Image (cartoon, rainbow, N blue to C red; front, side, top):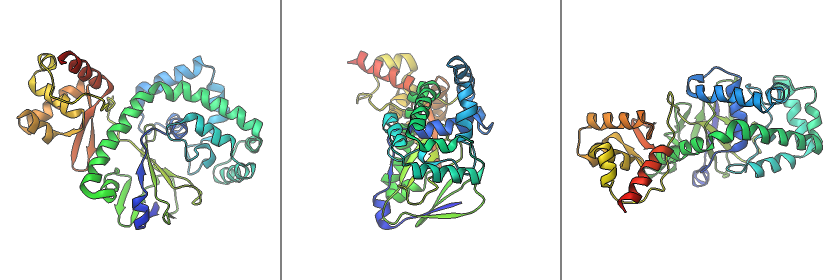
Length: 338
């Protein structure tokens, strides 16, 4: 278990990332390829990824470079997922290039002591070797992660909507209380369950705050930097459902659902879809549509089955948000009404 210790100043400096971390998604997707854990939530991605890796000629690089460098183990080098790369692949790759040779050698030695490092690992202390690595990382990202950016970002937006509700109800502590089953807020400590860590450790924020980064490809394996001197970052899992739709685009115009949407879906489902544009619980949909909670649940299920909304758990309730398809339908109906 990892115990993250907060002070009052840390609560004030804790934030939730607004975008995915491209280099962390590279690492997490490689871990998905090394495990059957949670495979059901990524079935379509897994099939297409294997095919795309073959087509792009990246299978050898996967086996000989990436899997040894990003083992699904208690440790892999921190410099591969630098802080400051959220939402910006280019910035992250530049940070890898800027890593000092001493740090690279130190972290490769730790990898070697933990699970065994590749024989060529020490060469990454050389800038030219890291330049070759970032070219391969970019090719992998564009093949494996980039095609799913929209879905991943939509899920992050849904997560932010859910955490915002916790924040409005109870401040930062309310937000921390709803981070999922692998993270428990026991003031002033956030307990993080590390499935592959045998020893407990403590991270003292000491006024630095914490950056929380939801991860699309992480599966029940929250991770922080091994080096406590690095900026405090915690990557944690988004909750998936089988064949999950992907959540929200909140750029939909204000107002009530128009006649065209009501004609297409019926009044109650049109209202449910509109309510989901800002995130809505089943009870809120029921109140907006003037129907019972059970009817609202059925309407939400129908919209989810059609790929128009997605549903995530938010404490004891569930929160419904739009998928990109649902947002497109709502935008088109809004334009037609106007």
